[in-house]
Amino acid sequence: MVETDFLTNSPSYNWLSTDPENWVYKDSLHRKSILLEVRANPEIEKNLSIRERFIFVANDSGKKVIEKMDIWGICVNGVPYRYVDRSKKENFIMIHISGIISYLSYTTIYEDPFYWSVGHTELDEQYQNEVVDLVVDFEKPALYSNTRKNLEKVIARDSVLNIEYIKEKKKSKLIYEYVIRYNRKHPLTFIEAKKEE
Image (cartoon, rainbow, N blue to C red):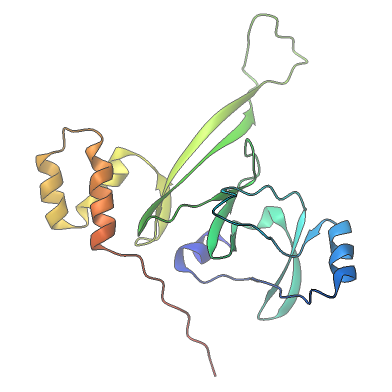
């Protein structure tokens, strides 16, 4: 799925349902580094490490093999995961759905050409970590940085909550409490796509 598919709950592709008896077919796909299915328990595995390069999916036009780099994320057992190519650990990061305003955080690794330290030679590659902290806004729908200013814009959408928040604005951690209250007042509901008959 791409970002807009995720935010509107309308995936472009679906996982294929395969016959458990057809293990030869599954094995041949696995040998070609093609992912056919993901068996994961979100209660145990928060993030997924998928090393296959391709994913075998289906859409309205039929079966298709797509490159993992071309997708924004996947959904496994109703739980969404964001694909992060240069993630520090696992490459599919669970998106914690806490309401109409949710959060996504992960750490990426990038090469820093300006890194210098004592004992550093020009042949050494030096990597730095960057923490990415995003707000997943299903109401707007959009993803943006998790900053106080952006969260204040969310709270401003509800005039009653906004008036209460302005009175207590000086308390720094209070903003997250108001986001929780905003989620309670504006519950997250996905409308199923209408099927044409």
